[in-house]
Image (cartoon, rainbow, N blue to C red):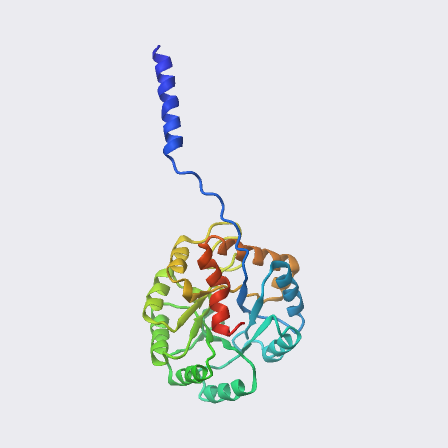
Length: 292
């Protein structure tokens, strides 16, 4: 009798636990909507062909091609050629190799007057691996921001933030409130630091490029969930983020690797609320770069 009661009690407890416990959430479906890669590069004159082929396989509408901070001297020619060959797919960026030089603003003024560039960059402000550490609050760079603002083109910067670098970036944003700065790679910063900057500076956008499983810090591993702190911030400020893939090295243009990166991108976007995912994947970039 006692055993039967114990068995019944155990059965009841198991049923109760199963009933009260939250159901395991189903895996989110991959984002299937329109997508703009807001930040990538080419390592040579022909790599764009492989990239556009991958765009076709994964329904990526457009790609923003940027220079690699002055490291690749042929970037302007490669980007221009890619835009001529694929005018409906490539949004050309204008490299600015030495953004804090005294001549940078005049050079930018001249180049923007001659090209169809819709964005400036990628401008390397602070990149520790290459021993680059510039101050974006310096007058010379503030002048380049003034030129970009007058031409209504955003400036993509690579700026690996710590407290000092964040303060310098804040000074630049405040000095030129009409200029839009797109901080690449989430600033290699914590979501908390990004939230503080976004709250204070309405002219700051953030791209999530290069935060894939091939680099650190990343938003998610190849198969793991989206970092919860980043997810919370993106969903809190959905109008401030862009999705980029950030291919740069030749090895990343292998078809199998491009497939992995684009599948990862759509999987991570799928973890966001649908309306947020579409803003981050497409709408914000389309608005910023004048895509019709």
